[in-house]
Amino acid sequence: MDAAVIPDELLGEVHTRDCLEGLAELPDGSVDLVFADPPFNIGYEYDEYDDRRDADDYLAWSRRWTAEVVRVLKPTGTFWLAIGDEYAAELSVMQKHDHQLGLRNWVIWYYTFGVNCTRKFSRSHAHLFYFVKHKAQFTFNAQDPSIRVPSARQLVYGDKRANPRGRLPDDTWVLRPQDIPESFGADEDTWYFPRINGTFKERAGWHGCQMPEQLLGRIVRACSNPGDVVLDPFAGSGTTLAVARKLDRLAIGFELSPEYAARASERLASVASGDPLAGAENPLTSAPSTSRGVKLTDRAKRPASDDRQLELL
Figure 1 (tube, rainbow, N blue to C red):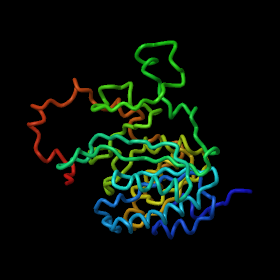
Figure 2 (figure 1 turned 45 degrees about the vertical axis):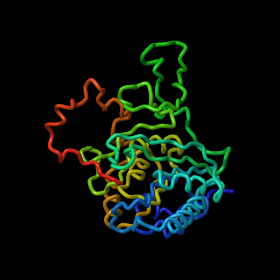
Figure 3 (figure 1 turned 60 degrees about the vertical axis):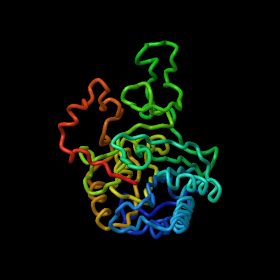
Figure 4 (figure 1 turned 180 degrees about the vertical axis):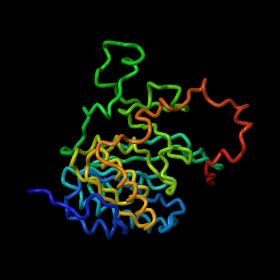
């Protein structure tokens, strides 16, 4: 059976509406890849959304919109979900048992410029769940050179026995990723990308929860093909859609906030297929090593206003 087609007037746009209303307008089995970075229900200040829901209400809402995501996915479609610690377990179980999706990876996005906490270990990661609708038939472009990296054996040691396709993943915990360039590779399930903070050139400047383009680029390249439909039900700053357009995919997004939607639309209109992704392709190359880092004596000379991390209890 031929796949359903989304009307042309809906593609390539950021639509100002609730994600449930927007998803309801899409036909069954019409989307190749969904990336969703929903509110985490941790009290973040959005301009149009209450991020302090009762837990049962939040999970019921999550069940509704994820069910719609599953409905609009093609039989071979892929769903990536970004979520924080607070509801990661519940949303993972929900997709596997309520919606019968297959979990391919539970990726950890490790970032610098994390969230400073005062009564627990500081937050420096988010969870990225990689689900597929069909457990055997799905897109994963494992041989795409843009999502692979050489191994340390190749780069450092010149070992001819090294696998020319790259190295196998490892699951090592590391405190300073910039001091071990052979780790945190693109082929691992712990990913290192700096969080987009206020001093980054890539920062849009009007949305506090902005994903790095290179992180989204890895997902879009691996789990879709040129010409595929990529959907973001929480468009926010428009990163998913901008990356999709740059990589020659058909983008569609929904955003509850009129202000965010307008600015995301401007961002989407400013990019074209073939434009380079923002940010360093290998973020370790832009992170200083310990020997080149800021000394404690130098740090003490900086004004307190330079430390802009959020304090969470």
